[in-house]
Amino acid sequence: MPYEQSDQIEVQAFTRQPEGDEVVIGLPAANVFVALPAEALEILDSLARGKTVGEAQSEFARVHAIEPDIDGLLESLEQRGFVRRRDGQAVLQQAEGRADRSIRYHFSQIPESVARRFFGPLPLALCLAIIASAVTIAVARPSLIPGRSSLVFTQHRTAKIVILSLVAYGTIFLHEFAHLLAARAQGVKSRIGISNRLWFLVAQTDMTGLWAVPSRQRYLPMLAGPLLDGLSASLLFLLLFAKSEGVFGLAPEIEQLVRAMIFLYLLRLLWQCYFFMRTDFYFVFTTFFGCKNLMKDTQDLVKNLFRRATGSTERVDQAHIPLRERRVIGMYSVLWIFGRGIAFLSLFFITLPVLFRYLNGTRLALQRGYAGNHYQFLDAVLVGVLNLAPLIIGLYLWITNVVRRREAA
Image 1: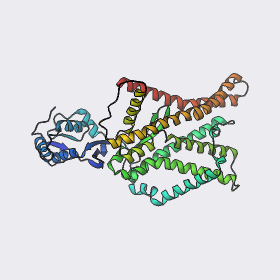
Image 2 (image 1 turned 30 degrees about the vertical axis):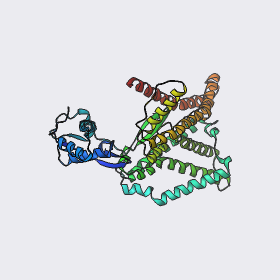
Image 3 (image 1 turned 180 degrees about the vertical axis):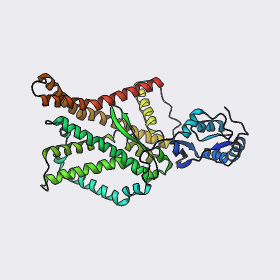
Image 4 (image 1 turned 180 degrees about the horizontal axis):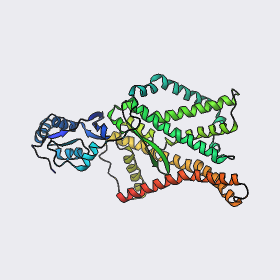
């Protein structure tokens, strides 16, 4: 319903954060953030001071010598819960529900002062020193770096994979908790959830509230997960190094699990280089260059290049994107293609070879049958199921999301 010139507007209290030529306004309680031209805030501030729609429109036109599309602005903001008419009429149900919705944040009871102690200068310096020490030793002793064979167990496979899986999923939670704790140190509430990236089953932390703080304060929460992974891998690697130097001994089973965990940590850090997905490194990149829709713009650019190469005249118009941002998109498109290549190389040279080794063992056990060796039969069958289950779940979520997107389109 169009706004009348005499309408008075109730403006919800919102946060504001400059982002280049724009300002990100937010309702942290509803986890809603919107990027607006800086001039649009003048209209919102006028309305918040009690001016009518007509008065705010006239004031803007007098200052900027241009008539603003105030109806379009207010309708968009009303849908997101930022504004509503003072008489309460014609407020969209969707907006009302979104603005009043109570979001359940995780570990919000952790005091900011406690969270800051984990991310102060001294803990960060110690973390970086440990990582630097491990990298230095790895360069000097590359033979200590585990390979993909560290994920292949030949004895007691089910027990070892169950233990490794429990530890791995526990450390995934710690990775996401590090993001959450670092965000909490900046006064931002977050939540942890389960999702998928392509065929991978992943956990992720919703840190949308970081839009409410300056960009320089977002880097540590974004990098907290990879930092913890790097620290954990480094500590385990230093443990292997100490064992190799005869400082102490490790049982073969323990050493095998340690090597497997190190390799899993390396895979996680490699995962961050999958620049065709919204990984932690992607968000660092977009924050540094101030891009609002880098992934979509990059995908459009790659599509345009592909269509040009195949002789198609269909194009996605990107003329509206500022020149500086188009340069960033061009640079990121190289990383986008590179990341996709890394992902498929890791699939064909790490994930699938390890999976096929286990599935081949399962096939041989089924051929020999249950009567031969009960334990080995059950061990081989269970290990095949344990390896296939996460991949099947991830593939199902990936295909389901692809189908839903196409149906929506």
